[in-house]
Image (cartoon, rainbow, N blue to C red; front, side):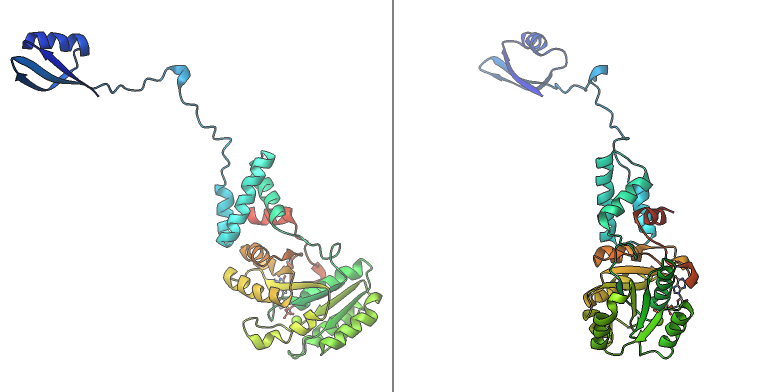
Length: 317
Ligand SMILES: Nc1nc2c(ncn2[C@@H]2O[C@H](COP(=O)(O)OP(=O)(O)O)[C@@H](O)[C@H]2O)c(=O)[nH]1
Ligand SMILES: [Mg+2]
């Protein structure tokens, strides 16, 4: 707004000056006569509408350049992936989008999983000695039987060792299986006996699979049934868990197994599971590698290898 003071002797003179100086739209705000002279305060509203010339129009936002992560976020949400883990994965998805200039969900998710997780193949990347731990019924013995079968088929000399003396019949089941497969079987009640056996005979085998008693990780006394065995060996320490378990329960249990020494996970019952949030959440929160999965109760079926491509397909299917 433009404001101006005008002094004139008469009103017609004042009006003529207002018109010539400010134009027809000027408004008189006040007027008073001082010593025979007319003093006017006049205002002119100068607000003008923006007028875009064609070539000056604001550039349209390129929506193709903007990465829409909605479907990826919805998929992670569906699987019940913990919020923090979702954040890590989606952040990597955006990074992949910028890095490769690709926006197709499967490609972006696969690369993001590759950035966020470690995949450790059960045969090619692991040491010959593998110890398995988990809650009762989490699929330890089944996984061992499957790996023994796969190892046998690959011509790898294998032995199965049980340390599970807490459940009646637990040994018998594995022993019977070892018998069928014609692989060596032994049982050790004490961690130092197991250590001595591996030290003296470990070199004879390409694959040594050790079973431990299933424990409740939330009961401190139970941890002692497993910890001495795990602690006595330098080997791959694998946590088996039911992939369909509630995510929060699964992560909290896995945190304790991580403290016991577990460094990789082997999810089981993937055939009975539609949501795999627990796999991604445990691997991320407990910094564990992903080492295959059990997808059938049938031992003959072996274990499935999991990598970033197969996991991305599971997430998006
Ligand atoms: N459907 C299905 N059943 C499984 C799988 N893994 C294990 N099981 C079953 O789960 C039960 C407990 O498995 P087991 O290996 O004995 O568990 P452990 O107590 O940890 O040794 C058994 O009835 C297995 O047949 C799997 O991947 N899929
Ligand atoms: Mg068992």
